[in-house]
Image 1 (cartoon, helix red, strand yellow):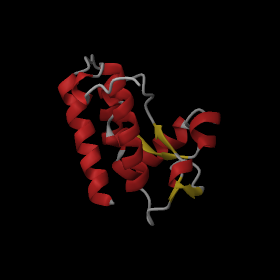
Image 2 (cartoon, one colour):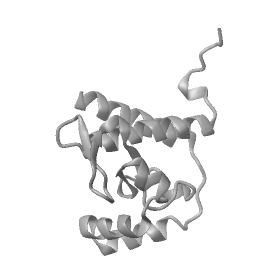
Image 3 (tube, rainbow, N blue to C red):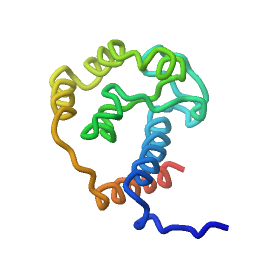
Image 4 (cartoon, rainbow, N blue to C red):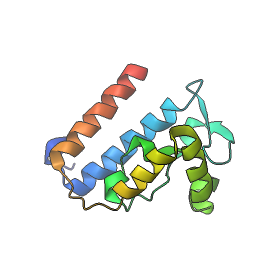
Length: 136
């Protein structure tokens, strides 16, 4: 049996994957009205939370906004995967929700230089885990 590695000793790539999963659960839960289903941000279809994705307006490859709550919303697999995230519809909805200025600031932030920080990743993982425990 493989030896279990403490969270603080995991490589940054693994920490990013763990944070992706925690943020995804948090966002889908946070946007659910009933705790069971959630609407797709871009097409509006309602599906069980576990069948939905955590879609990103600005792709995850842009490190500065990868874990920004302003950048992520629940999306159905059809919109997120097969329709490439529907960025125009996503942006339109974000502008209506958080405003044009906030979206433009996020777009600018996504172009900034970024270096991953282990402590920041660990703090974010702890934060979202605590938020999910509080919602349960």
